[in-house]
Image (cartoon, rainbow, N blue to C red):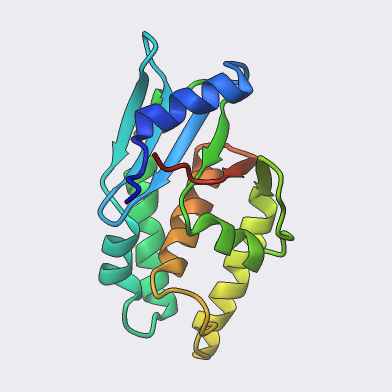
Length: 178
């Protein structure tokens, strides 16, 4: 049985693989919270916990057929949760993510499947996918059947994080197990 590697261990592995410049910021989208690991004062990362996760955001705002009002409430909740985070991040950091839902978002945004070590998904591509989701919400047409229920919540968190924390893209890496 495999167990997911800890956030700290995964961040350290990325530092070994890609170096310390630009500073690595590792995103973990979880059910109840979102975490970012970034350079700390020693060899261990500083872990920033944001008190909103994909399941909580989905349950509060997106579980029943979302409306423009519920979508706006979800956006505001994520923006409020992210507000204090920017000051805790390194300047010009590079965002990485290894969550299993990120490749699904990348494919939906038009990024081709790739065997490379990492793959960059631009903030522009995420924004375009989010705008397509908004069109679904406004039209009342059900979203794609092959998306997990919580995928729109993950997309919204990623979109707001890229925008408000000033990342131009996210580098998606394969999630490692031990």
